[in-house]
Image (cartoon, rainbow over all chains, first blue to last red; front, side, top):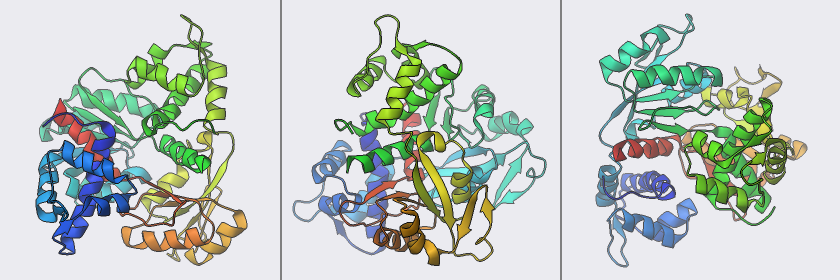
Length: 207
Length: 207
């Protein structure tokens, strides 16, 4: 990994990647920073800065070669190395995440789900089986899974995080609306949908 | 609405709010910026800056009065004014959003859902009914809904956005993994879960 990027830059890169992929698929050989800026409603200077921050550059007045730029982003964002993950909680959100077919392109492979409901244990979502929580620790070790996705109610989240971390998980993608405490060195990414809504709502108020 | 905050500051405020609420509920009268920082794994200086940016201040060495701080955030983030929204798409994600009971605290009221599947039309998720897409435009006008949540596959997203915007919607919360084009003045907030995963994955790589 190269120099550390700012959070906002890092958030934009996968979106650039999506647009570059779309252009590639349509057989367009070049893409210009203004096209990316326009599609994402981001300032063009910002797009140029972000791309320069990942040590990539285009041809003046022509733009970025889509195939090369795509490959550069794949390499930089490590998209081609698949990372296995377990989803904990087979409610609507867990199912939505397990069924979502856009993750594999970004290197995320949800390999199994976990739930305590006996009616859910054993069912298959595509190729992904639902296992009981009692097997979580053993399977994290066995499959050497480093990422878990928490799609469970708040009160259970900390307990599941503890089991996962003790079993070797390094990162937790937390959709439960609670703060999770983890030892130093473990990454927690909080996907707080209500907070995301507030940001949207404030933008409306600014209008 | 006061001066415009940076995106990252705005994203952190609802998380501060959640922590302040938790402290309030436990009957704790004061909260210190270091406690907030520690719980959220954010730098304490940043927490102080954010809180100062919304024109709030605590008592030296004692901290912020939880009740007052909670009220200040509610006012600043306009959490007490409920905003009605429609969810389009009654798949697992749409259901997860409709069932999620943490939104009301942040002023979001999902009042109805829309789907073209005749098997879904008419069902109720709690108090929320599922209507056919053919009624979307009429109901946006009737209920004066300003926000729609797109929880549908990519190919349908632009079409639904067009109908919604033509009917008076001002903001689109887009969970479909595509870029949506809207007229000037309409807000689109892209909840690109795959991109969020990439950010998490890059943080692991940085370790």
